[in-house]
Length: 102
Image (cartoon, rainbow, N blue to C red; front, side):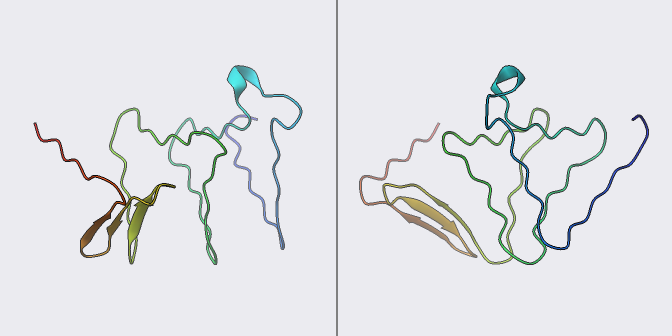
């Protein structure tokens, strides 16, 4: 199917499962690739969750990565440390805070 646009709509839900029996080529469970233009993923009426059991990597091979939110962005880890951006910058840590410059 070359040069064809495909679309889909579900009144309730669509589920995708990949790699449940065995991983695909290169240990990939699911690949979402657009040869041209953007890939847009959106939750229009609820939460959009991006989760991984192990490491979750976000990387841009050629440009920067932007994070934007209407109210705040929180980066937090299991040990209790966090950085909150909400007009102010709040850093919390139960242990030592070390800043390296240069």
